[in-house]
Length: 64
Figure (cartoon, rainbow, N blue to C red):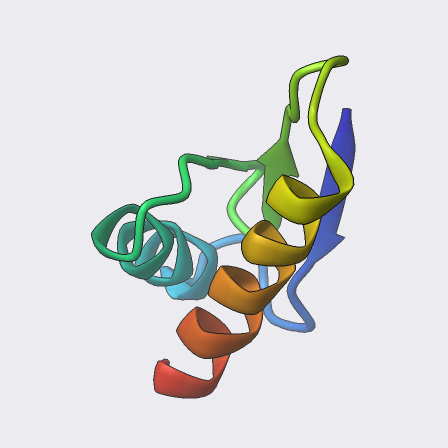
């Protein structure tokens, strides 16, 4: 598992909003504890798929 910690309060909806943007762009993630986004990539992920995920993360965060 990997996580992204959002520099916000646990009560904020920022992590949720980012996860919704991830889903719109084709990446599934789960907000945890309000300000943490949990990612669970498959063990068989290719380098190309990993780069695609990083692009989606960047695009989504910049949009929020």
